[in-house]
Image (tube, rainbow, N blue to C red):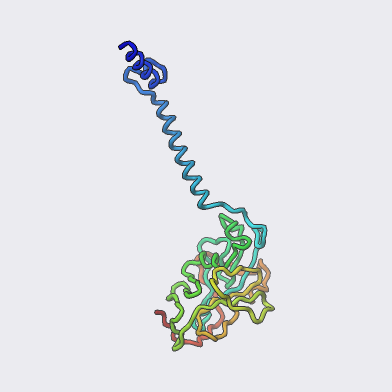
Length: 245
């Protein structure tokens, strides 16, 4: 019995941190608080580590465009032979967005995470993602406020399909039609891009905004967020009837 009594006293002392006064119905609240803090911090550390593993940060690329660069790319959206108005400047500028002037501005320093818009990550898909209502894939082209056109939809009596044509510069008169995912087209300074939905075999025109590429950076018009886009060049309605499935 004596040995059992001693064992109980030892266990009670261990539970109370060696303070006999705590054994009389009192609890070591400070100890429990520290234990709770350790558990909370440990859980937060695990959660943060998992986030870092699934969302690794990347340093801005040293490959152009860099955070020091400002590039301009002329673009146009042609649906069934009609060049649609320049897209308006978004409410919040990103590293790759438009200012309502028919140009894609590549300025990685404007993004909260510039690494997303530098080097090989400066692609057409980043512009599409920053423009509400704009849809682009190898099978679909959508313009804000209009039905999204899908390969096979009619331009007049003829079925159309999505094609994207790229010219490397103002002196490039032939360009090339993109194969594969157009969102992966790398942006280059002075480039021209037309996103088109046209019947196969129809010529894809250059963007009317190409004239803005020859203007100095300081003279290019910047529209205020939400302001109407500048009027585009007169459209050529080669296919007056447009139907989407």
